[in-house]
Length: 256
Image (cartoon, rainbow, N blue to C red; front, side):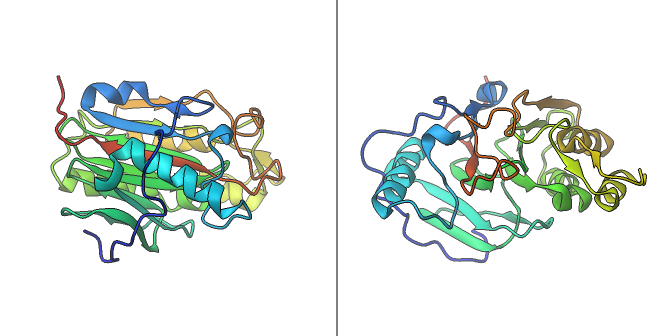
């Protein structure tokens, strides 16, 4: 397990499982690898760590998530996100809910561990390999500048995840038409100074970084959190709520 200790889950995991297809997005192409990956939608409620929602509602939604991920035996890793490029590696058998130290990514080479990032316009990046290695990343503009995706790819490769079979998916996030940034931010992202605020497509940049690192199987969600604000929380639209991007290489499942 990573350095931080496991704590009790926010809910007991009883009752109905979370329906991730209700307003969210499931990465169906990962299913043949025995990997569950999805981004929740507004209909599932906010999974932000700071919320004004009633405690009963928050407890219930985390409980439904835990039921989906394995019930009382589930292990779910999150972290205090800081828009950096630290990726935590999770090892060993443990149960419960882990809130790790400052980090914006999680990876594990062991099936069964669920890993989650919170997003609302930033990009949830998912990586999966047939050997069961998987990663979930939170990549806003700062994380993209810091090349968090390339950091995770290198860590997965060091664990034996060959790049020829590694798959990457960028989930629902703000699109290039809706995301305008300052000239300074644009220059940090692209190396070019436009001299004025300019729209930028973070998911396209992340895909470029992944290709440069050797990944060939890359997919990008067509969904924009700002354009589809009725379906997803969007920081640019003024929402305080957060989606959850989750990945879990399911225990006992292998390719084919």
